[in-house]
Length: 411
Image 1: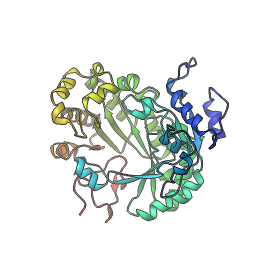
Image 2: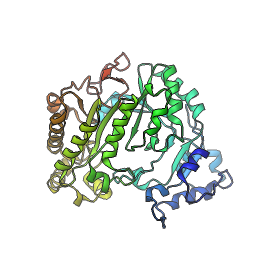
Image 3: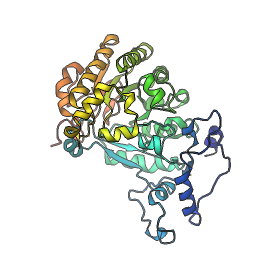
Image 4: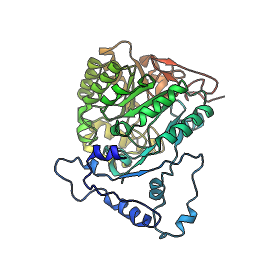
């Protein structure tokens, strides 16, 4: 905590110590501090979010709050209370076979870790990025690595690569002061496992000094400059992430890129062509993935983004297909729009690199069926960016617990 406080140079240096006695007042204050009414000159607005330092709950079941709530006002926000107390899931399942079959999307099952909640960026499409009230930082990292990580490895022995991703967090933005990835990679080395960071940040110089960086894999969410400038405030320049990827490779850490979410802004072809050219001129990713912005209907997308920023033909196509796409996790853009975008991105990558592995991230089975030839991978056993079995060097580690992707149901 002290290292982080020195590094962030807080606008308000006074620490508020939270106890049962002042919990309701603190909850109310945290609910009202963001967005700030005043921002000091030169300070990115997203950096004004409060930091809440706590201990992450490392047990397998979250405690019951009933006794505490009896002593607080009835309108005390339980979600904020749990965040303050570090009572969030230390590990969560992503993309289990059954859920992906139900939602018709293709990924790999994985268990991910978190010692942090909330993000310093302000990406408009992300609820936590745009509207998140504060950032929760777990301080008991040594305990987490000794208790949670070995427990998960023993429980899911088939998983070879684990994301330390946080819940809606960009955790490497707080390194090296936080120190999480140093402890994480050391623990993974003891168990012959690998760990991912997953970031839109370009803060990677600290990796050079990691003793067990041989156990680290870098995943960058990448984009074009127009999106970074207007839709992802606080993340820095888009091309900085490609330079960060170059540095990681120089450090001996493999990197993979995901154009996720790919946002079809006006002039998107020129924008993304330039980004892909830059990515492949300066760095050597093991894989590149694509995912057109999804997870919401057009009405919700319009609440998060100014639709005038987007390709008007695609907005019109989404409006026309709104009824058809309602409830479809790949919405709001219909299949034919997304396929057209993916084909363009694939073509641009192949202008500069014939060998880098390409994949679709959390897309539908129908999209994989249509594009698998152009992608050059089998949707059942494709190498992506941050799967549970994607070892360095483009290799898959399949076993009885994870014999293939969620393209097919688990027998």
